[in-house]
Image (cartoon, rainbow, N blue to C red; front, side, top):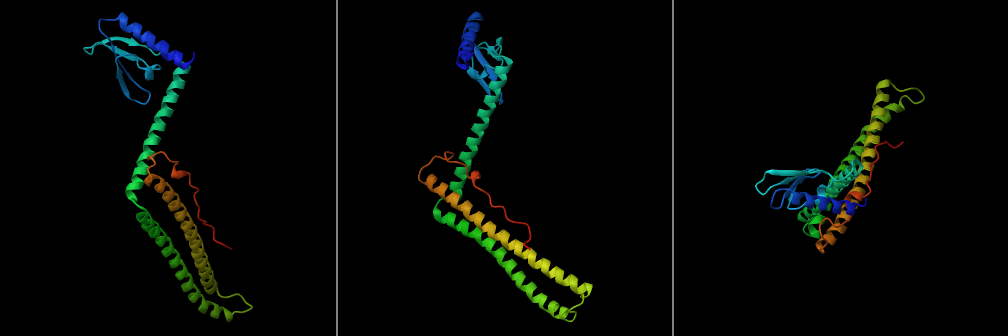
Length: 227
């Protein structure tokens, strides 16, 4: 049966049930699949898949209106109700996120300040790694000088360990620098996308009406040392 025909037949059955009961119109009440309690003076279309209580005006129960759908139809309707509820929640979240974004950045100057602060943090981390590489280069020179005494033969284990540790320290800092470069790219991409969205919102676009920022491609920094 077509869904509209099912609902029409359900409403007709409910009206007939109300006429067969005690004098006065019945009060219909039910709980939807997502837990909302509904009340109406006529059969509730949202509850065709669920049992409805029919109450007298004084609140006493007059009768019960059973579900009007087959088990398969009821399962399909409840799944559709859950999807609709999830979509409503997602839309509410989108509206809330856009409003929060506009409160955080009321104008382009505020957004630029935030971008510069984020970039500054990444640049500071990169400068620290560059400074550490310079320190390690200085530390390596006396080790290389000492290794000259052992040219053509294996150096002592302690010297070899010191040289290997120095190499590993430089390599680790190089990885951190590459990660921070990737982070700078990611930060700029995020702020670019935010700014494009904010310009539309500042121009009057309704919060929640734009595609989500979550669709942005994410930059994944490398964690493998370069050889």
